[in-house]
Length: 207
Image 1 (cartoon, rainbow, N blue to C red):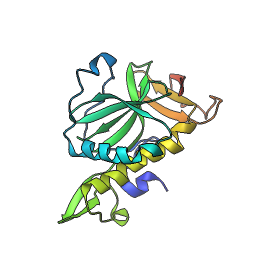
Image 2: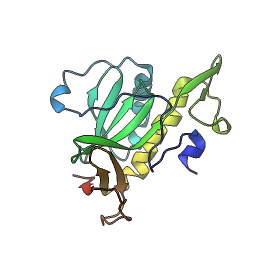
Image 3: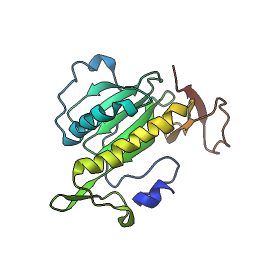
Image 4: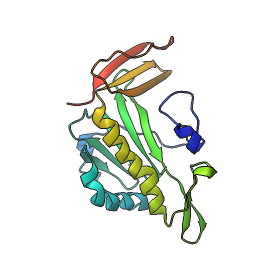
């Protein structure tokens, strides 16, 4: 089943979903800023993640390493994988995102993400408002919504997709569009390139 059939959020190209609200673009992780930006995480979603991660760390088939810890987000790399592939958990938009640095554009592409937006419907009762009504399940807390809708999806993607990924294919048109997707075979050959695609290149997932 397509994710859009559950969330009701559609897009014009694969592996992405439209957001219902704008969000701030990500930024390049710079190691020299790591230490000075280790601000104590005070946002509820981030605190919830740390508690969940402490209980579920053993389930991760790929170790995650925090590169920046800010008041509103966590940025981390995947140990053993290309540092050009990184991820962000944001409390401001209640979403985790996977980003791939685009060498050609000096920018980045977002091939994977997951979100959950808790909404109170009664005291102690919450639903994920990002889902279509027929898929909404009443939960007992916001934390439960985040754990199921964001953290478990993130873990599932790591264990089922990231561990199998061999390459990241990046295609685009300068100053117009770009798109990154993971390839799970040793060969780089893929389907037919779009007519308006000006460049295609590959980066290895593992280092």
